[in-house]
Amino acid sequence: MTMKELIAKLKEQPLPKEGRLVQRRDQYIRSVEELIADIKKWLEPAIQDEIMVLEEFQQSITEDGVGAYLAKGLKITLKNKEGMTVVIEPAGTMNIGSSGGRRDRPVASLWGRVELSCGPMRIPFGLTEAGKWKAIPMQGEPAELDEQTFAEILSEVLLER
Image 1: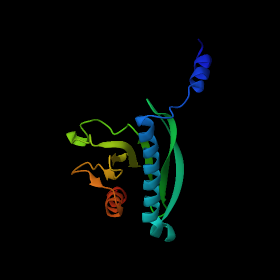
Image 2: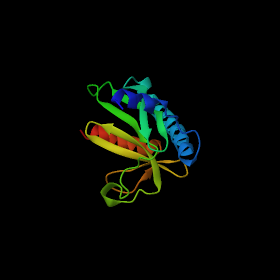
Image 3: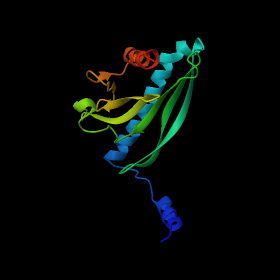
């Protein structure tokens, strides 16, 4: 079999349409969309003041057991910081990182992951079984991701440079 033939056969493979993992994938996609909507709402004053520009994008993700799918991401560009960019990027339904978590702190109760990145800094957000996002900081315990927590994370990322 040639590589072209292999690729053609792989394209013919159907996407999973049912099962627990597919339900989890679909819930993850909805949760990411809700997170992006919340972040856009939280940043609305900065957009109105023309400090930031937001741009949504679709991230292609492929995972064993759930197939290939698209999930929303968000690019935040700061106008007054020489175009500094913060990206909220979906990492996957089953992708939460190592079972030991960051600095050997357990994150096993979290599933699905989104990462906030700015330059070399990456801060993961994990989804709880209850459908709530938690920020997983370098130090301290995972904290529920709300407007206040997001503001603290952004200030750490944007003002500490």
